[in-house]
Length: 451
Image (tube, rainbow, N blue to C red; front, side):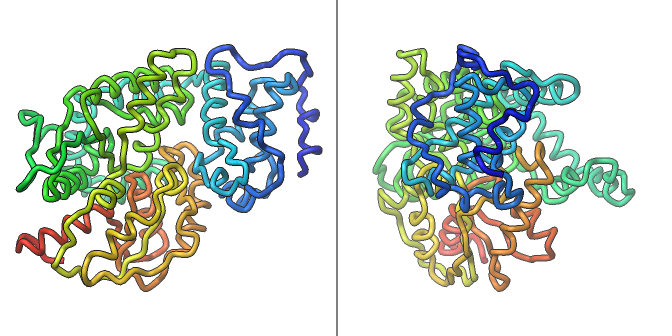
């Protein structure tokens, strides 16, 4: 379908008006679409366009829709909402765009408009309210949820649920998620609750603050522990601010910009004394760097967000740029690397994690074709859009080399999604975070581990 053919006249709800049909609050920024000339350079980069072949599921198609609402040609309705929320927000189109059109920023602003005009109701509204407003912003509640999951794993309940087939009452995509759920361990923030500062091992070279994250600390606390180990080994004194919270990425992706702003303000205040904020989750790091986008109408907070965003750095880039101890112990594994979208496209970090892997003796790096193609995780997209996420994952797994033993990456959502792919397509690769491999090499060097 061409852009002219999809000019939205076929929808009966579309009535041409002289004024913008956007709501005043969080109005999409027209400067973000002004440079789009609909050249089509973005089409091949878009996972949803690749699968559907439909213009409204392409980057330029979505930009056209967003612009059409601003011009009064289209209303804020379900016809507009569906392609906006079907976007993975992977940012590959911005990488491909010769004019650097910020499609991701436009999508998130458009989602905020949709959720103002068409709030979720029924069970979807209830689930969204429970998790996005009731659990993720509250660390104590997240820890309790983690405790319940740990009890589920350790008490024998998980085994019973699987053996009896009771688990099959859940939708297939949730069964897949349960089957690859990592072992729940003690959150880092609980372990260090009485120790705000973790000293460097040896000489202190610099002081950094660490964002532990929400899902990251509940489901991947071992990666957080590995991050602290690697930082302190390399002369970093690590501070874990107690009043930090969820980064707000899931909320902004879902169109809840108000909660995103509240969490942004909380984190800006929590890290105000830090010189550098280290993050080990690509999605969180990208969100923290984009905090200024949340405050177009609050100059004071916009300025604070600008200053804060300059402090944020992914763990791989921090280690790469400040120098780190190259391990001496060998990890004799064939490894391929998956570029998390919000690390490669969102933050422009590609070579740094690869260099870290190449510095580990024994590691044989194997190239993954289209390594920066989305895996379909996209926050909670694999839960809200399971069919499309599954199709994107299938394309991703087709590019994973058969003869590798590990797939390394830098984002928890990707780790879960790729673990589903490994299981679903009969693979046997181990899914690992880049910083984990470096930590394992250090431990082996110190005689504390063997891999």
